[in-house]
Amino acid sequence: MEGGDVRKGSARERLLEAAFRAFSEKGYLGTTTREIALKAGVAEVTLFRHFDSKERLFEEVLKTYTFLPKLKGIIPEIRELAYEEAMRIIGLEFLKTLKEEKALVMIMLSEVNLYPEKVRTIHHRFIDEILSTLSSYLRDLQERGLLRDFDPSLGARAFLGMVFSYFKAEEIVKGRDLKEREMEDTVDGFVRIFVEGTKGR
Amino acid sequence: MEGGDVRKGSARERLLEAAFRAFSEKGYLGTTTREIALKAGVAEVTLFRHFDSKERLFEEVLKTYTFLPKLKGIIPEIRELAYEEAMRIIGLEFLKTLKEEKALVMIMLSEVNLYPEKVRTIHHRFIDEILSTLSSYLRDLQERGLLRDFDPSLGARAFLGMVFSYFKAEEIVKGRDLKEREMEDTVDGFVRIFVEGTKGR
DNA sequence: CGATATAGTAAGTAGTTACTAACATGGAAG
DNA sequence: CTTCCATGTTAGTAACTACTTACTATATCG
Image: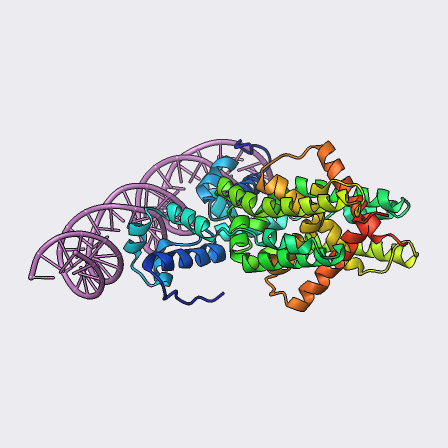
């Protein structure tokens, strides 16, 4: 989006950030080392002094910008809430995380072909993590007799899948910038369907 | 998958198919015209005689291999079925279509950065089409008083989103080859949640 | 002050890539 | 038979790209 330079922090940090942005906006192959150095405001040779090759820079970018989902942290507080309200928060938090980490999501989708293993690793640390957090929450509710009997892992997939696909269609493919209000309304609709579909009768 | 040649049809057809495969397996930038020609079993210059440039070849590939979703065709027969059974068929048919058209889906996801407009066009003709087909089916059931009141377009998104995300996670990211049985079971679970969550009470 | 680390400038290399030019070949059609 | 037309072969070009080498400048630190 913003083509601006990165002018704070050490050369290494600036390179990592410039590379991260560039890879996410133009893809790995579509990005040149010259361009990254320019954006970072350093000489191209400095890039190769810090990272031996373009590929190692890419690896460092992934290592640096792969985040841990914060959903895990909010689960304890959520167990106190009503089911529907809890799912609303989980869905919205997941969607916001996707939005914040859009650059990383773009890299994952673009680079599945070129670096399947690297992408799989991130996917595992990110999506699978959230998935298992949500399924253990659902299992807990089942054991307390609040939900009907269904595979909680499948349920988690169903719910997060709705949210992810919505994000993919609007933000990634259509290039939109979703507003708070619209996100809330949409998640709300998803929650109503999901909660109604999983409640005990 | 198979690195084999394409040895039937005219040179033009062979080029289109070889390019389609290559683009989907290695991305647009990761594919060379030399490689396409080799796979098609023709001289590289023949490629440029048929298509003026690599980019125009790409456009022709998209034009040629963009398909019309067949979901629309089966809707009439489905209106006769019970809601749950109908959704099962729709979900499974959608998933199978994604599987058959996996190459195109890969291209779409990989090339959002490079050619956003081209990808948007395909997405519109493919996903949006299915989406509106399903929402009109849901609206119909609502009007017949069989479903509770909810935005049918949101409902369609929810359901197809579950299926798409499942496909993305398993086939695209994890590189698996989903078997009939597993697809049926998963769609079945999705359907149960969705149907229960949208039925009139 | 002197050593060390970090950065820049400049020049270049070897490989690749999309794309072109020129000419030869073979088959189908009139 | 001859005229096309689609194709192959060969050679080449201009641009780009990841990466290197060699030398210089600056700032920090003991």
